[in-house]
Length: 452
Image 1 (cartoon, rainbow, N blue to C red):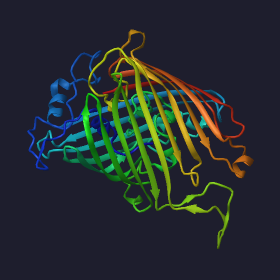
Image 2: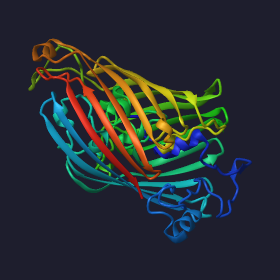
Image 3: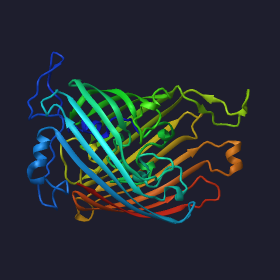
Image 4: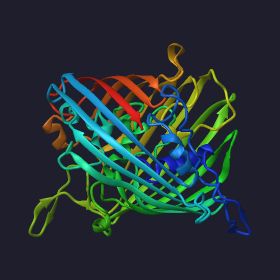
């Protein structure tokens, strides 16, 4: 996973989609109620052209957005079948609903530069994640929020509820409960498993997976040294979070059980007038007990021979994307918050990450592939193909168990834009398991996403 800032917010910052308040002498100026941080969506149009299937509610929705309140529901249904290999041939069908709300206090005329973000979630059904026998799930959307056991139904939980306050045009602070899965700014490989790839290796960086929670409490800062423009921009984010996951709890009971410090930089640029972007980050987890990887044992009084532990660990991660061809050129920076390719065109993506060998079973992971929009003269259709590789540390114990020292896989998808608010996706995955005696799994599936 990536940095736990509200994903839509930070992606919009780097793309220039947000309007920050004017500041004079380091003090925010009062903003009229008609001005705000978030742009007002266009809810109008017929069923085949509007961005939200439920429409404008007779103008009420636009009126509420002009007053600072926005609300939508994203409903995703996924049917997958593990046709062979893996742990078990099986079929899984599940439904997830995301309830998104924002309170633009600047547009409300309450406080310049202030924003409250909320995400509630529910989940029903099951998946083939455990049947595929892979390290990371083949259905990311069904895996989060985290529960034990996995795939447990969730009637409702709050994964994201935080407050952002800009203190100047280039600096802001954020505090609250944060959903980390939206924080990966990649034009062709993000989308929470709901709009682009479904395999988690193409949604976030596996080098962080074991040390980074999905939903947790935290606080941090936003710094924009280069505002977004035609050439893009630079956004630096630094955050201190609780390392314990709070997907289905408030998170306050986990405070004091270890923390993580994450700092990363997102930036966009143009190569031969084609948009591109990169992300580079560092994670340091501390005040916890991480078992060392290796064959060494130590004698602990009252416990016998046990694995030695470390109190800290670290990870480095990087991602990039670049358009190779664009058929509808524009000077506007890419909006990484919308979870789909902005341009009709094609491009490539890549990710890589490494982690401390002392206490991380996954020491290196990478993925790469192609993605795009507008195939076969259908401007709202999107597609992608990707390959991933994960290196797993081997020890005398893993050798005896027959656990492989790496795992890899492929995924291809084609998403049909039935309307701007409804997408039907066909998905194929061939994934290798690190488990002994487990053949490669071949997973086929379909996904229907509706934005209301």
